[in-house]
Length: 308
Image (cartoon, rainbow, N blue to C red; front, top):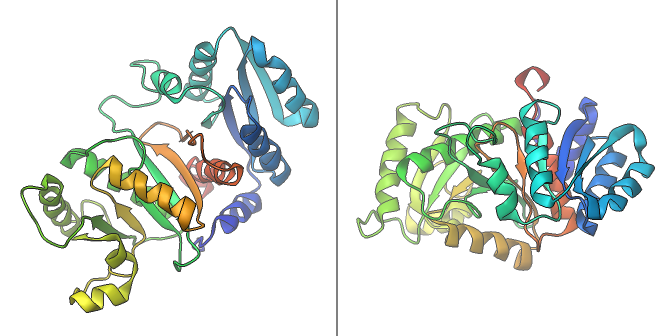
């Protein structure tokens, strides 16, 4: 497939395929979620199962009146019940994607992670991926983990990288370049993640991640700016041309996320990975635009190989 270079191209790609993803939304009672629903209906990339508590049923019916052919409404007693029902709808295949509305993230994740009734396979690793369109970078930049795993273990790093590579390939990038981020290029046992990086690079050389370039440790500037790599004398296919940044901990990843969105004028999209279906859990401070692109990202991620 043709590689997707911008978030607007992502939407156009979805529209060209003519497939509406079925999205179960938990408590679609806030303006940004309403905006996402209305815009995606207009762009013809999604249809909705709105799962809401009785106190906010009027909002769901208002949305239904705008597009009754592509919206179904499910009423529950409480937001927790709404989360549980929405997860069930995804588990049974009635919905392709789970999306958070005006419900506490912890409450939603409790339903997502519930053993035997949630969306995370036994032994699976839940993580988060962000796709950023940055005005000063020449392509989309994927990075993890800004929201879920505090300090990844080696096995968690492996799962994160595999999930990120799989999504990157859905954008048409068959040989992603992965940068393992640290404050310097030195391996140091005082920073255990740098020891994990050594093993991850060995894994890549052994073909455990498929066609991919993985290098590091390196700082984020070196990963995205070839001139910085030249000054430091670092020669690598990853330097200055990274597709994926893997951060050592949630503090670094989240700070990068918030900095890009505030000071970098970046358009952002994000979702949970590792689940049996995409889960969109936007931050409360994300813009309506960011939440819309997150939904579009999940629509692409939810495509089965026969549809790609």
